[in-house]
Length: 267
Image (cartoon, rainbow, N blue to C red):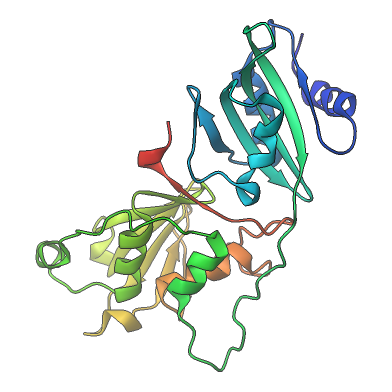
């Protein structure tokens, strides 16, 4: 079977509206199907890898996709899309043969979160970021030696950034916005410290002016070398990028679903 986006449309039509799944022929390359769905829906989440299900998977994270396979799923990746979950990978059929699969399940669409409940009130942007990404796991890097890192860098670091690293660890928001675990000094001659970056090669920095790091503005150094400043801390910047559709670097989507992909927990 030649896999194209038209083939994907045909396969999804075969499943029909509502919940459903289909075992595919052995000549289908699951990786090619994953790549086509990724082009359509973005970066997937891994629900099952080598037969082991991510323990955090529940209804809000695509768990309904695994129901048709019981304990026979071998590798399943998933995408939220509107009121559906779409998944693909491999699972064993009734005869125990591992085969490519495509599966669709209903998804409860969460109510969208406003960027801030009231712009005049004091917002804990890190707590808001946890809510936006529905992050409930224990701290990923609870023992970071910030005193050593700050001594090496020659400066204190913003408190919300340190909370982000301690909370989420090594990974990326929505699989696209990489959180740097210790600021890069590549742009220090321009007065910038890099704390994140994107697949589009934009660098998210601070302009490290003044003695209070919590007041450093965010500066985006684009791949073409231009800078754009934002008078806000890093955690607020990430919140706005994720859910404000009018932000210059928005990652907001129609389904309003966001997550953090921890690299040490993925393949």
